[in-house]
Image (tube, rainbow, N blue to C red; front, side, top):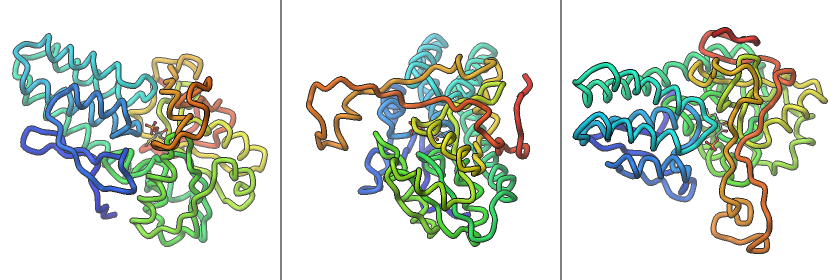
Length: 325
Ligand code: MRU
């Protein structure tokens, strides 16, 4: 599967990201050479999606290692990156890999960069494998409902939830993509990347999912963090979709690599949920759609209890919980 964009590249000691806040209007790459800018890019969603956040954070540590005068500066960079977003486990699995290197040896800049390259390369392979394993679930003339963006834009490869769709392109009749308010990852990102790949895609309002669920063969979504019992944090609205799927006997799959599984926690109750700026709800882009000072509740993620999830499409096959440490 050939993609005509790249979410992250290491170029001459700088990180080049595709700025996803500007999509689909503008395809603009941004070169970044400080860890502070990387933290900002993760925080304001220039790069987003759990696997990509992990990979970018890895390169953020590599940036700081290039310039650092001592290991404390690298450790401070890791701390800064850990504070960018709380929910996606890939961020912490990537930074934990970096911590092990920083603690262990002296040849840091090169070793950290090599580890960042490994995280990126592994993620590409994980996506490919998820795609192959998920392919068995996709019937001929498939109609699929996803949520948010768990595609190529969210990873270093062909995505997680969208990977089986890319692999079985010829079998896909239609992918239904909910807008995904408040930040519109579905409308801006998933619709864009599927259109680029010439896969039939239909954009719907989040509130149309109750009608569309009757038309689809299955739902596939991504994940930000999965607990040992299978409870899964993903973009706000995923839980609602899972309930809808169960009510209509539609299979509901979560596609995610092992780097998203947090086996240190037993259940979804222990997953930290990010709350974001109220203006994301008061506005659409720069356009105000509500009274300026209206009270807002804006969790970025919800947790879907395991009983609503038919199976987990991972690099190791279609799995069900409990997941072992
Ligand atoms: O806030 P975002 O855009 O980072 O949220 C992204 C999601 O919820 C994705 O579904 C998840 O990270 C999986 S991406 C392969």
